[in-house]
Image (tube, rainbow, N blue to C red; front, side, top):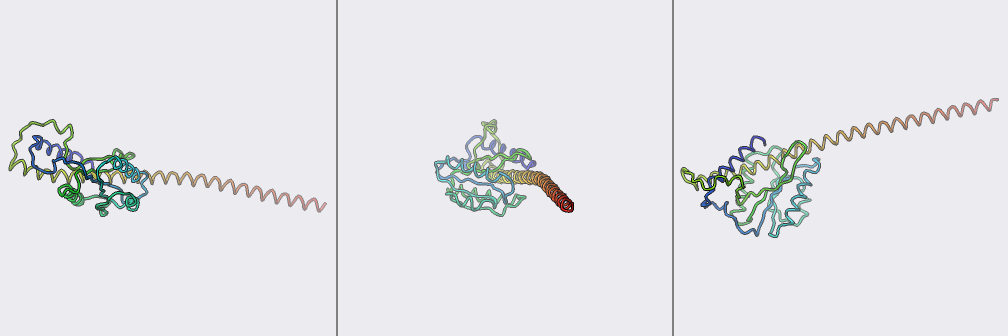
Length: 249
């Protein structure tokens, strides 16, 4: 994840520098009227990771409820099939085969599918929703527009520069676009999976600490009860012995 971040950032910057003149014919740069929006939810494969999955689902619901357009959903990960299916969302496809260590081939398959959705008109906008890895103890649900490709503010710094491209700008952009989509999707998967592993580690560490505290507390209660029972038995024995002594006198 850490290695891919700067590579994906540079790939994005190069793509937007080449396309900065706005003359590209690539349809993935064309912004259409947003009548159909596709949300890609990157959830975990399992539970036992605290609020990781539920926080992401809650964030996605809040985003989708604000949309006036028709919304469809693509899921990545095996968690929450029943929960997501219980919603009113239209599930286009579920990528369940993505494991604990996503590969570039899996990212390419997902990127190709999302690209096809956009080019065929099944989606006018595609938004990635995932947990951004901030630190080992913090993940933040975020959303990122994958398509159409929209330049960010820092990527507009080279607007107006006329680059000489070989073999040509359109051919170069087509190649850069494939790299861009694959890198953005792959980076998203790695961010989400790293966050899931960290969240599960923290949840299991907290569970272990809590169980140790509970065991310690239960041991103290057991010792108190045992001591109380022994004291009661001794008192009964002494009382019985005193009663026998009184009868003998």
